[in-house]
Length: 321
Image (cartoon, rainbow, N blue to C red; front, side, top):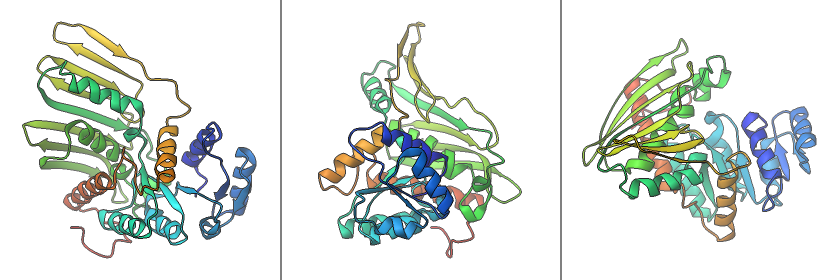
């Protein structure tokens, strides 16, 4: 659902997997749908999202529309009996996320947030390295993610739930939670808004129980190093590209270095697809890699950050809580 660049990456991924078939594309433009179907070999090309959602031959709908549409498109699919894999950020706010998840569970349908970093093998390798205690007592981490995307329309428009936070900051927050867990004691933050009123870059400090601190930065106007670094009293772990890991290095205080390479992959999207297929085949309503509770946790954190920054999207008819 949606025929943009990220949908193209997913279509390429699906076409290189044996477990799934790219069956249909839905777009609000008939020409885009037809061109997409021809390029990627989809059997059906629908010129509306409603037609796509009503096709009972579909097992899972992948939603790749702007953030502002995620709630509406998820509900459309669920109302039509379709299982859903929805791009990050899952919805525009936590209230929408809660409503979508509750409705999916009520209907016994699968839904998951397609935040691929939660599904990648290197995420689980990182967990093993941390648990080994090789860098000793961990005190802090840093994570940066930024690209020069200032001219991208959907990121600039408040009505499309634009800004760096929902598009990029969501990854830095997820990285911190994957490493340090969910016991947050307090959060401090700041942002710089663009002329349209959305955050073009932001800085976030999350303090966790036990004395751990995560320092996060995301930007839609600058290329950042995309690196996550975890610091312990015996050394550090460098995680190259928190958006799609390109390698891990463990660097100890005595300058010993051990490197871990990323396994070959199609695009990295395949892991969330295969997890979704497995969950649906087992009759589950969520993925173990990104359970609903974690999606809601991240959405609530981002709501609180936007409230602090005074960023409310035009379609939000209430004050964020």
